[in-house]
Image (cartoon, rainbow, N blue to C red):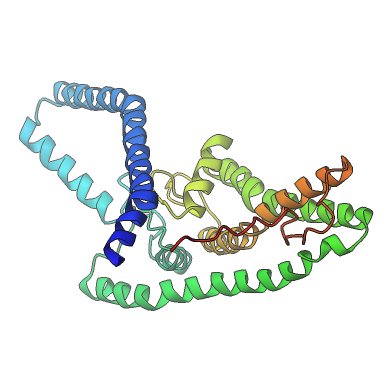
Length: 294
């Protein structure tokens, strides 16, 4: 019966997956709370002490006036204005910064440190995202489709001599390694040097960006004390697009490469596919079909 089949599917697959998903969220919440709550409380206490010291040094101000000033600073920060520096700070809406913002919109990164403040800008952002996000998905899917067409030739590697298979696997591994260095290792080094971050902070920014999480705690080109080149944020936006395209290319390749390495290792130990068994494209024996009882 359809109802029985639905219950069986829910109990056999969906329910365990749902429980694992909820447990994973609970685990993450617990660990983040243990790691961050004490540091947050310490920062809050330090900020309150700084306000008290400020009032002690400037007795002409009262608590209400200071709170009003803090509110002005917070509103400026929400609108993308850095409170540090003065009015000569670089604009957040010059062409380079606007290009960077457009890239964060279509890739759904959305750092949250900058957003349109005018009604016209907000309306345009909505329609721009409605067209840009599907365009970005189509672009990445097209790259994946082109790669799958190339993978169809890789599936026939088992028809070639073992030496040729090994050379192809090594070449593919070298290609993945060099691409990873160019996309995921060198850019964090550049960001770390330009922004004054540690390498771990630069790598953290790169991962949070290319995974489209986009917390906004680290964003390039926002320090008013630094003199950035005019195309710095535009280059960062291009890196984001190239990085997302790279991830779309390598994600299907990594499992295939691991299966090929496993296959070559089994063949080198004389544990290849048994005679008479049709080889699976992944290099592993095909599972036998189990008849479904009526």
